[in-house]
Amino acid sequence: MKKVLLGLLMAVGLSGAALAAGAGFPLDKAPQRTNDMAALQNGAKLFVNYCLSCHSASFMRYNRLRDIGLNDKQIAENLTFATDKIGDTMKASIDPKQAKAWFGANPPDLTLVARSRSSSAGTGADYIYTLLRNYYRDDTKPTGWNNLVFPNIGMPHPLWELQGERKPVFEKHDSHGQEVQLLKGWESVKTGTMNQDQYDQNVGDLVAYLQWMAEPAQNSRVRIGVWVLLFLAAFTLVAWRMNAAFWKDIK
Image 1 (cartoon, helix red, strand yellow):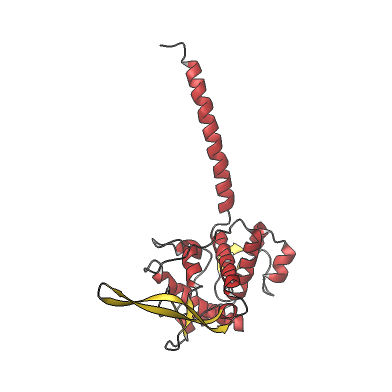
Image 2 (cartoon, rainbow, N blue to C red):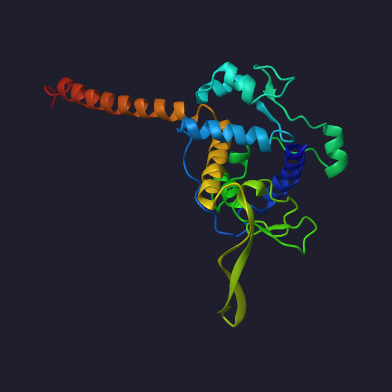
């Protein structure tokens, strides 16, 4: 039930977070781990535990997780729900009618979220990575949470048990005659099950999985593309020398 509630809350937040992408908050660079099988497997576990209860990934099948080094038994035992089959798409367990009644709209599908959230401020991966690492306690909000990336966010912190609770510490500065507050650091309110470095690592793994899920063939495409460019470079050299040899006696 706890995971279901977290998933429900995440549905509201990420759909609203899209509107805030590129709104001016500096985005942190998400680590590039789409070639790291261990990171992708951990990210898949986090996705199933904290996102899939409400967010579908309807363009991804469970058996496609073989591409990140998992076998059918591991997928079935660790990443599927009781009624799911290995060839099924990753659909949320929430009732769409209930979701619409509770939130006014169904939770968005997350298959392409790492691509669709891109903006001039950074990639979709950068946005999600920064968003999930900048929650803080704010008792003035109905949910008790706020976010530096998306002020007044409607989604409570979905991973708060992992990160813990904290508050930002601001410093006042004068900017062209106006007083502005700059982030100085963080004050811990309640520790989580992970320290900050561990939490950042896990968020990076989750984001890496979302990147991979948005285009599973990306790594193969890049690898093939490199070989194609090398072939074209070699063929160009051969064609240039053949052309020189063919025309050498013609003036």
